[in-house]
Image 1 (cartoon, rainbow, N blue to C red):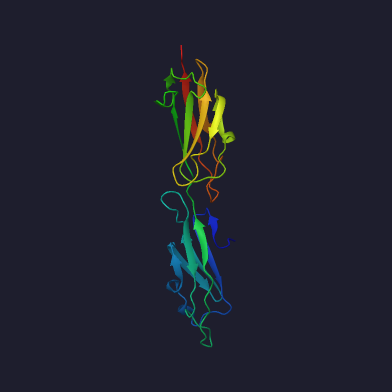
Image 2: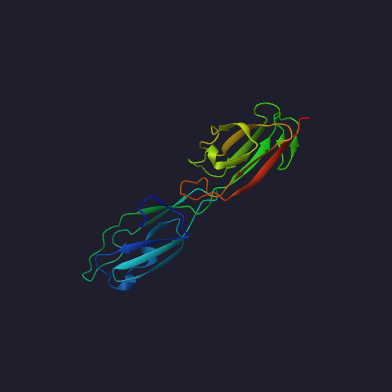
Length: 212
């Protein structure tokens, strides 16, 4: 059961309507009687006092949630005495089934872009290699400990580029010894978006320091 303004990570969301009396005739209550916003592929069913409206998930293109609002206005059906129904209370569900993704890039001490598996000779400063993690959605639980790092000495984590608006950027600066492989990777579900969707795993990004 979800309360209004709750998040849903389900592919289908169902609203349940419990009436105090059945509509008369039953055919008086139809899907068009309900006010709907962002309800994709609505499917309406029910009988007597219990009715259901099903909507498919509707995440925004950028991965953020979409508000799906459903309500039953007043005077849309009558009971056997011909009395109109009172208005219901709108219920808003924030639909989000998109997992946040993380893209890893790297630069060396001279701010040169490095590809995965590259070797750099400019890795002698205290923050010789900087890994950048760009997250597709706003997250509040991505911390340095979520990164699996190897060969990263004197690590310096910076989340100052992460607050809204996008892009959501975190960096990890690493010192490196000559001949050392410095790599970072992320396991799945180490960070979540506002709806609680976890990230897919991110494969290892590795750079080799060669200063001699």
